[in-house]
Length: 66
Image 1: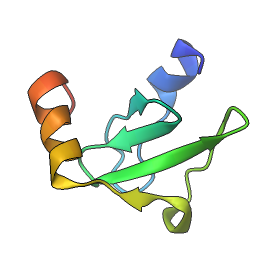
Image 2: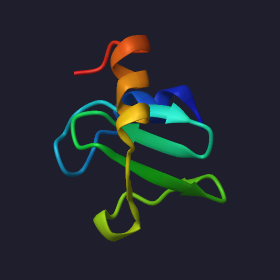
Image 3: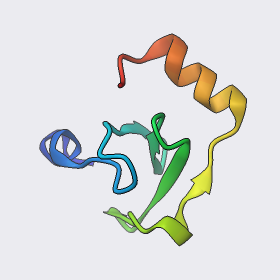
Image 4: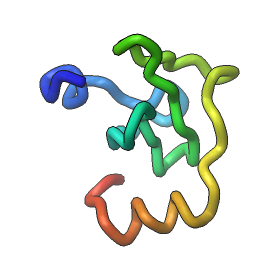
């Protein structure tokens, strides 16, 4: 995913920052992972999955997200 696009995208639920992880955009503030399908982020609530507590902890430990 293009870095410029990642810099302007925000979580639709919380308007918080997103972190690219594999083929997903993770939102620590919402605890959701939005899939990227064929290079296109699917930023719709019903397409997101809930992050596990381990995934959320990894964001808190390794990333500077608010």
